[in-house]
Length: 419
Ligand SMILES: [Zn+2]
Image (cartoon, rainbow, N blue to C red):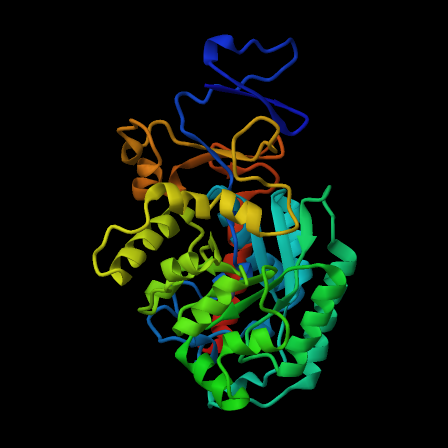
């Protein structure tokens, strides 16, 4: 098959022999490569890779563990160095559209602009004293709330629609246990005024659920409903520790669930993702900075759903592939991606290595991709008709320099933490 791309969009799809390029048109021979629509990675915090490989065996909340670098130590330039590594990894793994939010959000936007992919970027907002939270109680830190909300709103002002519309902005209160009721209510107002989606974490830990119940007398999901955030513009990551009533609430609201099966499984949990789907929630897939490998996430989503279903063969490759492509394209606002390869769609696509042994035999269907594919198979990535990755390397940045600068920032911060 051949794709004809004009003005950043798929103009025609035809059999190889029917494709007749005009003079001056570039022809790229995929050499028999599988060509997929660009993947949409719906929840990440790119600078958080500072702790990758170091905290996974420490327990659930390593951010509170002595000896681990703290996010608030990072300067803007250090945040940028880490974000560049994270964004480069996601792009080279086949993500053409990402959601990324953290403190110092301008650094995330700068990284996305540099590499050229589509990004929905936000400033992570919270007003809990995290030291008190780690000891089990909520103490409001209004100065932190003001500072993080200020940075988030500045980002919206300065970055909405930048990079020819490839960068848009989102609202991102961190979580029900790290945000006061007043702050969450403020986000409901801002969302109503701006029409923006609200990305957050929900029911990520038993500690979060217990603390919100103790503080508010209701579950985290009920709290979001109570303040007016529970609707189809809520994008809630994790959604693990939910009771049946919470699942029904999220489903009835048509809320979007950013499913992070790798991160969830790494601390021993599996979200009730099929119950959420069946209740009416919109499911999207993410790697949540645990890796950038959406193929691994597809596989883990299938494995964890079947484990939860007690070995029933629920969830298949076709559906889980849609969670990485068409479902997030529909569910998330603020991007042009469709998650499809069809006439008229933006030319967001990736090629897989035609020589990769793990991708053979190719007979048909999505099985080989979801059950055997790997981010390491991605050789080339295009966004809006522009090649952003060629032969596994980013086009717009020097990969070796990106890696070296992230490594030196990480060494400095780990040294400061006493590692
Ligand atoms: Zn997260």
